[in-house]
Length: 325
Image (cartoon, rainbow, N blue to C red; front, side, top):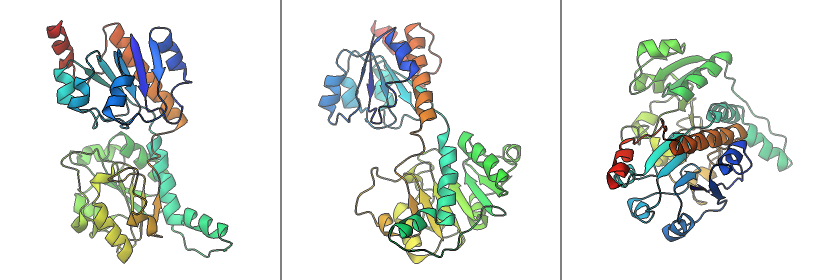
């Protein structure tokens, strides 16, 4: 079997022990630069039966999948497959399985939270300009953290928040009082979370229901002293409205690792604001994150080769492939 790793920009997958194990069973090629056009991707994947895409860097449209007749398996790193036309993949008998990494997003959430509230980056930049800034920071202890989405990452965030001495309240589209209580959080309706929290931290999956969930009216429910932290997906927040509120100082600040369009445009108004901390989607690319990606992605492929893949998110694709045979 020929296997291709796509978009390993950080050269982080190639040296892992998991890829070494895969090389013993399959022919492996690794691309460390963006291929760009569909034609370039098609050429690179010629004769390839399985691919390991690094996150969502290459989009697999129906048109592209139609040009990959030998492709059988996409072992997708991460927890989502937003960039894959799942209907087309299933119809063509292409199995898609997920390969999660480590939850390094949890740690980054607090890095961003501390940064924006204690003005760390702001002070660092001032020092480099020869200044000695006198700033007033805000501690986490005693503050109320409002978590939107109490899934795996949200639950970890809640635990760390309690260690900081924060009070934790939470909302989610399917969250119940009982589930929230298991994380020592208090369930509240969304509007009440936004009104009550000193920090709102977003950990929802992007869906039709969550897209633009934090609209301008919702954001205006937040306290003037409150901060917004988003390490989930940019499109969950109305970015234009957020810029407006930050410019008006209607909320105290924001720390963002995700944006509606990535990379963020060089002329984006967020870049001109002094009450935001911005990161280029750093939640997932870490040493342990890539190790987890590699281990799980390779395990998916080896299981598939042995006919015992259990993590397919479209298992019906296997039946399509059998019907073709």
